[in-house]
Length: 293
Image (cartoon, rainbow, N blue to C red; front, side):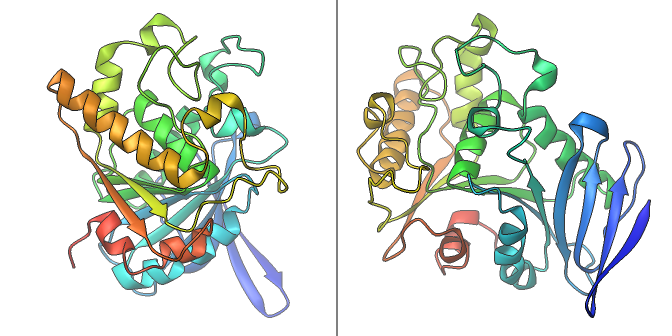
C-alpha cells in the first residue's frame, strides 16, 4: 500500500511493506512499515536518485528514539556509497530501554519473556523484508548503531543470524561481555542454558564487527539519564570509551585462548564525543565499515 503525505511543499511517500510482498522503496526520503499490528515497525528510508546496485545501511537509533534523525545523518553516507538507508523505529511505548537495547529477552526483574516478544527477531524481519522488497536477498548490507543502537547490535550478533557484511557499533554505553559470571546485558549470566552455549559466543566473536569509539566520549554524567553508572556497568569501565576498549580486548583474548576466529576490529575517532552524526560522517568511518570504493 502506498500513500502520499504532503507537509507544506514536501511530499513523502509512505509505503506499507506487507510480509511476502516485494516492493522497492521510493527515491529520496520516505517511510515504510514492516509487519502489522503489535509487531509493526516503522522504518525511515532514503534512496539516492538513480539507485541501481549499491548496498543498504540499516541504522539503529539510540535512547532518544530519533530514528528519523539517524536516517538524515546517514544520507551523506548514502550519497557517498550510493547506498540505501533504512532506520527502524523502536518506539518508547512498546520498547522500554531493556526491551530495545537488551533485546527484551528478560523482563526488568530478570524473568524470561516469550521469544515472540523479543526485539531482535523484529530487526531481522525488517532486514529481510527490505532486502526482499529491493529484489535481492543477497544484496550487501551493513548494520550501524550508535549509543543504545550500538548496545542493541552488540547483543543482536549473539542472538540472531547475521547476514550483514559488517556490524558497526559506535559508542555503546554497555556491552554483553562473553562471560557467564556477569548477568545478561553486561554478560550472559541468568540466560537460559541454550543461550549460553559456547557456539553462540564463538559466533559472536566471529561476526565481522567494528567497535567504533569517539576518543572524547569520556563523560560519566548521568544528567541526561542515558548513561549507565551502575556497579555492573562500571565493572566494564568508568566511561564509554574505556568500556568499548575493554570489551574489544576481552573478546580478543577469549578468541585467542579458545582458538576461535576473531573478526572484530576497533577504530577510534579523535576529538569526537557522544555524537552519532559526527561519528558516522568522520573520515575514519570508511575504515570502520570496510567498503572499498
